[in-house]
Length: 99
Image (cartoon, rainbow, N blue to C red; front, side, top):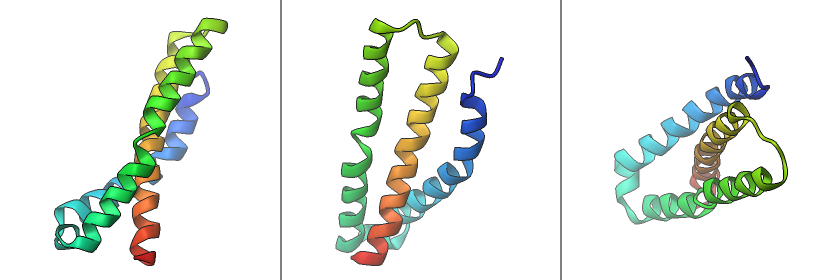
């Protein structure tokens, strides 16, 4: 049964993989070892870190007021994970151009 989240997952997956590639390329590459690379990684973590806990808090709060199915909960958590990495990859991409 598709709760609507699965198609959204499919839409987000290419962005997730691109972001993961950017993250790994920066952190494991030579660029990530210098001061500029460390600044970019730190900025990306600062932007991405609050997404998951804030999203989880909102979902848990919504559980108190609405009857949310397990499928919706699972799909939403998966989307939060994808969005966290996408935000981090986007931040890396932007800051690599700026810094």
